[in-house]
Amino acid sequence: MDCRACNCDTGGSLRPHCEQSYGHCACRPHITQPRCDTPEVGYYVPYPDWITLQPEKGDCAILGDTLSRDGNVYVTCKGRMDVTFKELDWIRQAEVTW
Image (cartoon, rainbow, N blue to C red; front, side, top):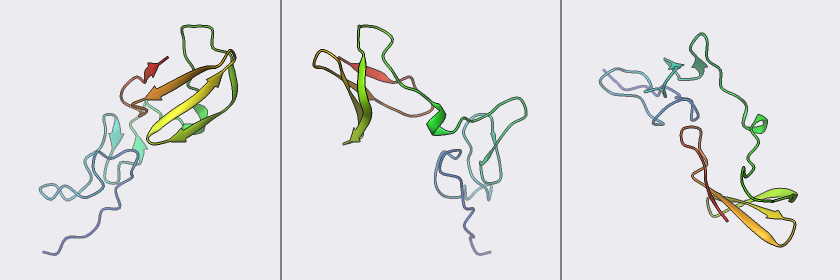
């Protein structure tokens, strides 16, 4: 039997290829198969532009838009303070460096 591409959803699947033993995509928790592009009943996945990232502590008044480069997201705060968000994904909480 020949392998066929599953077209796994990059946001909902754990890996970009089919699981050979099952013949479908391995999905993140509460995301359904076969392509991992639909949340289970009672769950939702927000669009990335619905999510706001901002520091909870400190007195950072964010100036301008966020800047992305080298895998990190940067913002500039009033008072010449820079903030770096690391580990930005939908599973872990972001680590913030001041």
